[in-house]
Image (tube, rainbow, N blue to C red):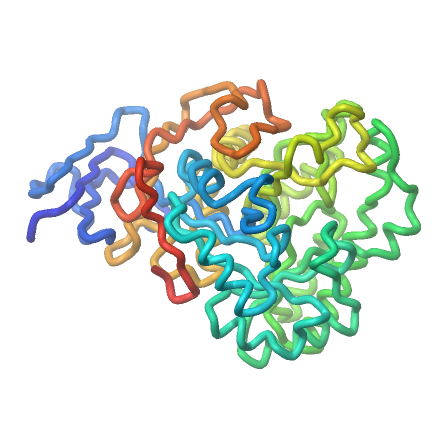
Length: 445
């Protein structure tokens, strides 16, 4: 064997879903060999894990709003990807909206890539958008390298990314099905929300009532029936309503090509915990009651929910309306890109889940969802995207230690378990002084 660039050795390395004592040898950004722990190998750099450390694959977060170009004051590729690396995330997929222009045509995708070039601490791929104006022209964006197409079924919150009607949703699905692409949907129903009480003021209960579970249930049923008619691959983002789980389970049993994600905030926070006026907790769909959270965990354990991703959706602090605490006017979005792994692991462990399951939800499963070749697992020939993690080490969430552009978080002061000690992208430590993340497409690195 020729000299390796890096050899990481440890008593607990996650390989094919099981823990092994092993050495992972890396050259040219790829895992070249997996050795017995005591095997001898020539390497430029040898790292021996501490007794409290494990080695897991880098996380793949397929739901991140970077917002650059156009709203870089909200976030940006430099800050978002440094936060990702600090949190053990080695691959992010950027959502097509909140940037200006939104990623709805090839020129906008080129602008996004130009803005990202040279700034990324981790690998970055891109979703395209499906909006009324680009229906019939999605194939060109697919061929240009997006991972799929995001759509909304109600007002997205930004005027340059309008929603699809029910008929337009089915049109988009038929178009995407023709090239076996993937359509992902923000599934809340506009008319249901319009009929609900309008949120005003500091009351979280009032905001929660304004976006009832029925808004998700109705929209998810719309997605399911359109997918049933078109045979398209569809994915429901940020599931919040556990009431929709039976319909999802039944649709999949019928052969509908449907996958589903949820997010750390729905798995770790509850409506009962949200103080009035604390708009850092506002997101859409909202954080619901503790009983709903328990049902989401059950659906995750049963495999009805496939993956857990951040839905990192930052804004400037001013847009969160901290001065008034008005849930009706504050921007809806939670920043958790750096914190997702310890948040989910802490709650998962308290419910009897193993770390290997968490990695399956947040790395292997999300990589497989989007066809991120070679990512999401430690395997010979795969990407050397690796995380040294101390699962039993506690820490208190300190906003001042977050790399997000704005250190706004509902988790401030929370004690969680699981410290990311080191993150390797292609066998190189990140974040580092020089960003070396790549801009990737569906074929991988």
